Length: 438
Image (cartoon, rainbow, N blue to C red; front, side, top):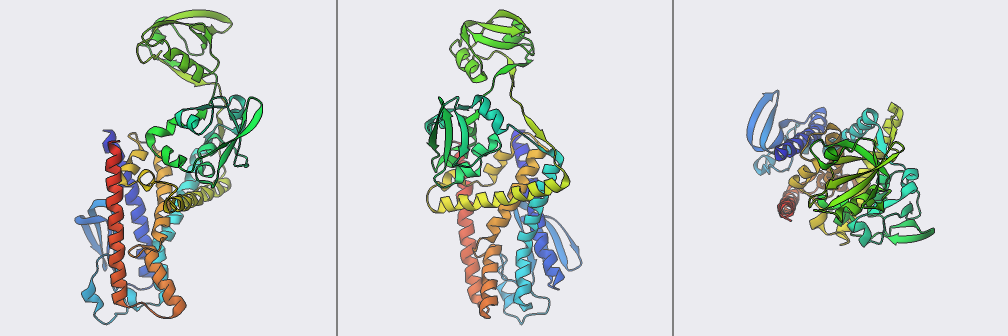
């Protein structure tokens, strides 16, 4: 069932984004009097189609993209016979270069607008919940496996990132930390400030879903939250609001200490010292090999909630949208320079579907869809033949030089671009499949 939900989410997300992208091309083309022969979401074989006016609107069986077929344009269809005829007034090739440029930028423009609007709507509808720097500095962090490998320790209090202040815990695993050049954390440890360098390949390690939880998390004191009725916690009478202050006689203040101590008693019996109000008691639990007690911990850490006005949401949404683009520019630069292994940083449809997750959450869905919209805009702007950016590159050359590249040149460039895109698709699909079995 989880697989079906993942697939449904990515198909819906891509269908929305491809639909608005291709609509951007179509409406711009129609505005300038160009004939749009076909508008398709998904690639052939066709499973549905209807003709309205001069345009056939179709849905393809392969939901990994889409296209708009504009008369007189050298594109994926490679209709070379039609290109041998004299240009017609409704054809793409008969229009001025500036009009053709606007048509080619139409899809990218609409994706940028869509991404910004999604992030604005998310900020306005959901606001934001986060642990502030002040809360993180109270108790420090828990350094898990990867955090320890780069030199962090549990209890460290992170003061800044590469000399720059931060506001939220999520900033510690954000773009400035993971993609900055020569980035580092300034850490307060045992009353002294020290520098912990952030390796360039840290984002590579954290990009694997199973490693996300192995870096750092906030450290917090805790109390007992909801208790599972058929568990050891339920059997011995643990109650919501109880505070566990010792495990087997060893004092514990933070949840990570509790987790560490109880693991020592796997398959054993141990006394939990519990504070209930002003009364202290010992409860004896029998732990199995997993050392699970059977309750959810309630962090005694203030989660800050903010609601945003429409004006503030516009500011936050626009910033979030363009931060997504900046992160991808930085990430691509690190891939090209060899600092990041593309096998660990590039995702295809399967990898993206796994990020959506096996449960349907609308906030997460729209957040990822907004990110994908900005990424789609950025990737399409790359000057690669067969992408919008390739067409834009040739049109800019025509506008600046006054000379239009020959149809033969554009045909060959399109073929080269298609081969490059096919090779990239094979790589990301193969990489996705390989990662499924890692």
